[in-house]
Length: 539
Image 1 (cartoon, rainbow, N blue to C red):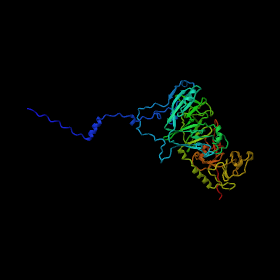
Image 2 (spheres, helix red, strand yellow; image 1 turned 60 degrees about the vertical axis):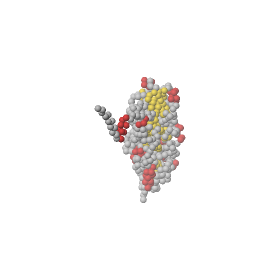
Image 3 (tube, rainbow, N blue to C red; image 1 turned 30 degrees about the vertical axis):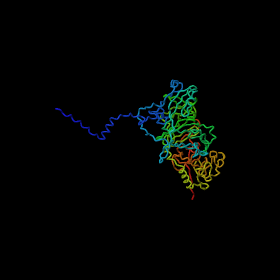
Image 4 (cartoon, rainbow, N blue to C red; image 1 turned 120 degrees about the vertical axis):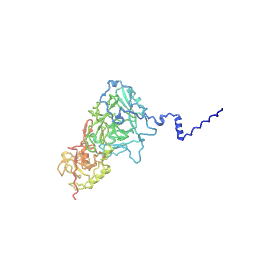
């Protein structure tokens, strides 16, 4: 019996859209992910990973260095490798941020509602608010350091050992920063520096070339006891015999909070090079790196406590080209360096003093400057003093402090003081002690006027005009101007005179002496300052 053929199988059930998409995803061939699309390779020409062996130069946290030094002629110095990579190798296998992302804000971009970041301010001692000829461009008595639109910092990259005659050829690349150490007539070491996107560099020196951010010349009062008139330094006549280096030092500031600032001796010239000649103090460290000192040195003193709270002087140290801290040499330009001070760093703090052998600079942080009076506040203090109508106790004429803009010219109503007692008078042309010397014309040169006898207490001493301290950054607080420095007569707060009278400032090759920060005149007397005694109006 014939059987009918079996019926055809039923068609498969229709799949849902989600099931179709799932099947499509499983059967679709995978395309390999290109690393340049989702994980771009970082630019290793500008960044590096791992610890930096020369962190004190690159601007990161200082790392401890071995104490032992290897001098020229030792086994390590005679057989160095021809070149040494200072930048650690990069691990390209580590994950990188996705394309378009960045851990740092773009350079030069500042939000409109935010002020530019200020690292700090440098104030030259001995200039009472401005140079004698006025502040012009980069030649001024005070400079604020702000975050640059684009980072210009540098850090050590590669070290080369070359023959000395070939140094000029090795440094032919003017776009490359480098430091050359001449060890002998036949052997030199060149350390190449690379761009550091994390730091800003500011250079200070006597040179007026464009790479110098702050042009500094010798301060009048820093060279002796002569009564330095405020702002007298900075004239062009002293530059030929200046002891300040053309490229004295450089300051590296971190572009991210807390915006740490570090100082290094020597600055890069127009060819972006630093040369330490055969006679300069230099040495090879035990880890194969180089370091050295400049001819007259860069000295730094950090305050022992907080500058605005408990001002106390620290210890003067010398900073090397690589930012290491050393004890002072026997003389300023001696070839033998001092002992390495391991527990101190080149990090600037509020109140740090920088001496360039001819000019001394004060570093003030934005936090410290908040405690100092502004120019407007100083003018208010002057008006308050004059509003009290102080009178001369002998002539009964009303005294008045001249305008802050008036310099060096003594006003008829200007108050004068007897330095040994503090009694404030008007100017009078009597009371001289002739055996002490003749009077100066108009009383404009206090140290040469001779001594006078105070009619109130009969004490004999200098008789000088009083000047308000106009540089607010030199104040330690915004207190009333009740005291004056001896013997120059610059008036400021009690805390300010007490703090500065304790600070020994460098003078010459190895001498130190306290001086008035407004004019640079050496302080005299038991305390270096005097409390002013004003007499109020009789009516």
